[in-house]
Length: 530
Image (cartoon, rainbow, N blue to C red):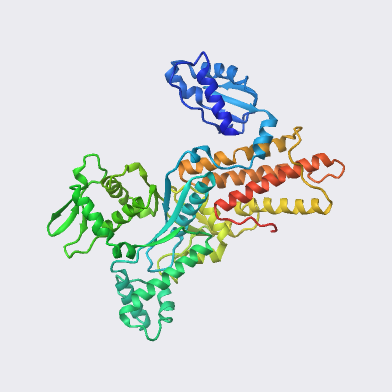
């Protein structure tokens, strides 16, 4: 309903005599700032000023006169330097807040499929905290895309090819013999645990492959317990079995983008003056072994060949140099560079008692995701990770994460769902059921709460636009705050006023639904009791 209002406003303004004949921008909604007595704020007048060659404030005043004619708008006011502040009719807020539909018309008009690849950690050790941040980001984006109606899959790329298995075997053998792994090997006491479980009849040459499969199982269990489910775990070894790197190489050769030099085969990305990469890269080494870059090109070609039109790769902080070469490769494969969307998430620093948490004894040089989950809980991990944009470094406050008070945003939001469940149970015991709508005579706290419900879908759309779920966690905390204000000022169960009680129960139910759905999108539970 909010989308329809936006379309009506856009049409009304563009067809108005004062603005007719100009190529004017679309109207975009944003919640009005807290200090204004309005519901929606538009910057349309400022965006249109250049085309109309008028003062933005004058444009805003003209627009307000036009917008006051729309039924759903109670009032429209122009504010310097050119804001248009709208106050909505209460009935429109009630009906929109009551609408449970989430699917977006933008998604319904989009037929192409999206593939989001994330984590994709080497199967040579346990997952670390940074992998958890990538997993949280990817899983939340997949869930939000699907909720809005997009066709979206998720994938974990298992790097189970190359010389990793051999190096893992050497490291594991050293641990089995009570020795330290070689300097370039894999360290950490997790290999000591693994060495104790080596089957007695397993040949040494199979140590690496066996250990890798065991570690893949561990990573899969970690993801399951972290509430992350992948459409597919795609193995790099399957690419090589299908000779995908060779096929991709032949494709590049036919396009004149692969050449031989010094006994190796190179990718000629610099032949394209518009390519972003700054130098040519080796695809096949002198000894005939394909590079990781060659395998990555084959893997992305495989993604496109499977019918995906948009490839979103979630990468760790050390992958900045990877982006230009993959954009060049995507273009060489015959696809638009914009169809490849890399997201680089920054590092996570754990702090406790004001100091950075030291490295894990088990992993050797990093804190494992499993340790963090065991220490503070999966719900807290998921909510905290989702609360920051991927491009921002994150300080994960362990002291705050362990608190079960309103200081902890996870507890603050979950407690609303639990409290509403308690209210509903009390109402059932008294034989009171919620109304099917809301009384139009709203208290200020009721109106504020309902207005916040109106913004749920636009918040999800913002998450997709910015490829970050942080908008949703902010929304949930703000919604929880408004509910607490409502609960403190508006008595819900009042046996002397059944109509008001039923109306407020309806509001509570809608809030609980939004809280539960929002938490679900970021992989967090919505408990009935706390």
